Length: 248
Image 1 (tube, one colour):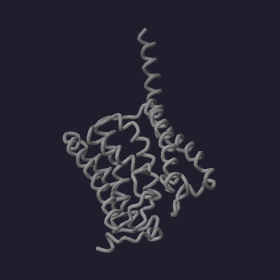
Image 2 (cartoon, rainbow, N blue to C red):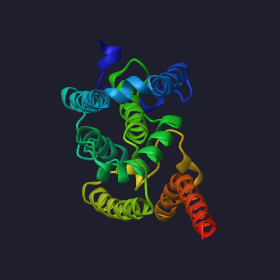
Image 3 (cartoon, rainbow, N blue to C red):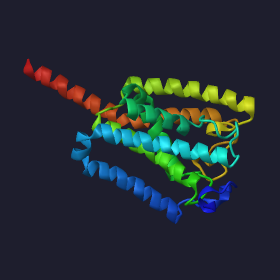
Image 4 (cartoon, rainbow, N blue to C red):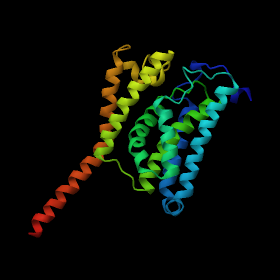
């Protein structure tokens, strides 16, 4: 039980690309592949599957906050749902439960960016089988799965307006969280210092210089996630114009 619920957080106990890390990535990949292979069955039962994904993410939240509270690790500086991925998890829960495109618009960009980075360079603090390891990958893997689920089975796709909406909300988020960080001495979304474990932020200048760079990078990454849809739409538009010219 101690291995699953121990209270002491040792950031050095997790090893990047360890056996448990790789195995977890394989499991998440297998779930995504399974959705594709079972697409006909899932399409017929997409509401039930969506509810299951939503419940899984809710369980992840319960596990995380239960550990924080029962082990006296809850702090205003670390435990609030203010990390971007924690906010996105909440968006994904609402998105799948309400089948909401409005929430998808932001969850797509935040979820795809946050989940991929977090899964490749995770910082769970504990190694498997600790609950914080389990909930970390449940949350980030669940974000990726929920976004892909809505795209594949609800045909949700980001629009240019979705990209603009996400950029605006991202700037609001950055300013708001930075104010909270300053007020309570926190480091949500690593806007005041870099993570203890290895991360892409290691390649950026020290605080505070990396913060505006991080905002620019975020906009660029979001744009990259939209480019495939932009190219496809432009191509379809050109084909449509050619057909109209030919019809005359």
